[in-house]
Image 1 (cartoon, rainbow, N blue to C red):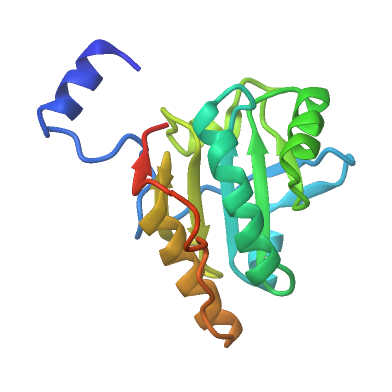
Image 2: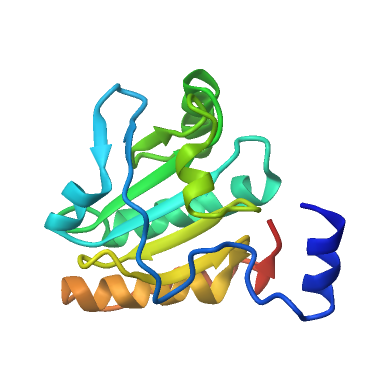
Length: 181
């Protein structure tokens, strides 16, 4: 991130580090997964909401965040909710990341054409996580590790699936409120 952008953020002149915030329409995309299956946001939204989590494998905050996303996926994922990890790395490295951190939801690759999707979303930091509703509107936009953002996604998905909201974090875990990406 450029020095002027950091300074303006530090001074409170800039509210967001992504161009896509809650209430915006999510840009459509179509990317290939690790298994070469093509995923189209518009097609997925016909079935239900999408949780799209952008990341880089070398990012320590991404490594911290993704196991919690896996918990969300195990509780609230599946029909009609789709979880996607959108990697800014090559397929081989991304596959290793998925195995190392026990992630079972699909990973898409955004590094093959110059981060086209990440750039369309205006990303400056990872992880950045979006909950996109069936109309294509971003309901939650969360950057870095944000405990409240993940809990808000969980609440939306529990309501959507008409199931009880389960705690995302265990009482024995020391989990910070946030970690910048």
